[in-house]
Amino acid sequence: MDVDRDLAIRRHPERGRHEREIIDAILDEAPICHVGFVVDGQPFVMPTIHARDGNTLYLHGSNASRMARRLAEGIPACVTVTLLDGLVMARTVFDHSMNYRSVVVLGSLHEVTDRDQKLRGLRAVVEHVAPGRWDEARQPNDKEMKATSLLAMVLDRTSAKIRTGPPKDDPEDLSFPVWAGVVPMRLAPGDPIPDAGLDPALEISGSVRRYLDEHA
Ligand SMILES: Cc1cc2nc3c(=O)[nH]c(=O)nc-3n(C[C@H](O)[C@H](O)[C@H](O)COP(=O)(O)OP(=O)(O)OC[C@H]3O[C@@H](n4cnc5c(N)ncnc54)[C@H](O)[C@@H]3O)c2cc1C
Image (cartoon, rainbow, N blue to C red; front, side, top):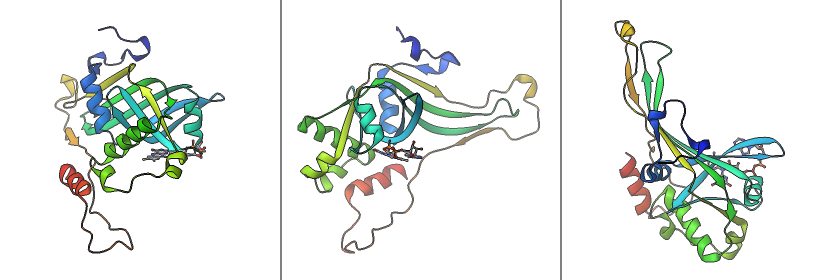
């Protein structure tokens, strides 16, 4: 497979993956991304929510946000997501590592102004976080639609890098007397806290219940 020079994985190339289904799965599982861009020579890397819809990656933000305004100009951007799967505790300090799945996307974003596509993209953002939530909550009105920018990026320059497995100590270090292994890591929700003023008759909605069940 031909790989874009900027996306070729040079350190530990065996961990590099370019299959779309692997990249899509990591983008879909990661709750947030970081988007990097340069304004007047100053790089910024901003945490933000993302969503994937087929071959499109969506970001959204307030119209007033510098991030949204600058990205809408189509400047070069880099989106990164990271899933931390484990702490790799080796026998040597040098061989400590982390198990992870991460994706880098290069390209530029454009603002989506078509109302139907914007609704579809905003829906994707909400559903990315908690599937089923869009239909449970009040739909956006015109004022809210105007106050929100939706930015889209084509997913055609992407790479993934994945580390799995135990520590990789050298054979001569295997007898060093210290515990070694992997501490699995995952993001897990705590107990939900009802909003103050919530009608006590309202039960936890389906999307939240499902989220709790699936991430328990
Ligand atoms: C988990 C998470 C999810 C988010 N999701 C979204 C989203 O979907 N859409 C969205 O628009 N925003 C989101 N944000 C907020 C986002 O990171 C920015 O704060 C916001 O977009 C405002 O950007 P701006 O360019 O207008 O910031 P400005 O107010 O112009 O930034 C000025 C300066 O404030 C500081 N600053 C701004 N934001 C942050 C930050 N997050 N952390 C530390 N310092 C900061 C930086 O020094 C920055 O240079 C999210 C943040 C987090 C942590």
